[in-house]
Image: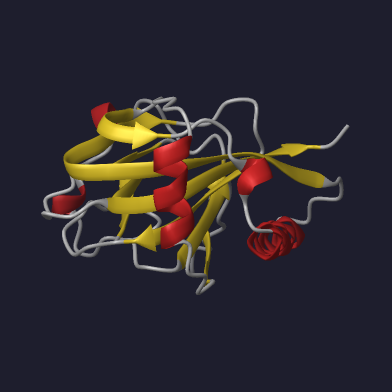
Length: 189
């Protein structure tokens, strides 16, 4: 008899290309709104801009969140309720963090120069770095043996993920700003 593998506690990242030109909108937000930096080092993050977003873009984000929610087989309504702008200047990065008190979080990449910083998702086990071999010891890096998962952002790409999933952003090693729009969704009561 051959042994069987069963997966459990699997985490997911939903992604899609949205192709919205949001750069001018973002540059105007930088000029007119206050900074409210959370996880960024040498970066600029806005306060909540959900009421400023173009309706067609907000509707598309809500549609994509709904698609991810359907994949997760989640029944209750999920509401996008906090949106902020990130501008990572050359040398800027984001510390490891999660988004407590939310269900789904996401990021949409508006302008992504080459070498402007990958997003790295951390395995949810808090002790994995102490008791699991480094992935360089693995024959092949996979979702079954990785202690972290690295994604390279691309212009117009949307990522959605569980809000509890810790993540960070590498240093922007380009000579241009990387611009993204991040957001959180709550379960409606």
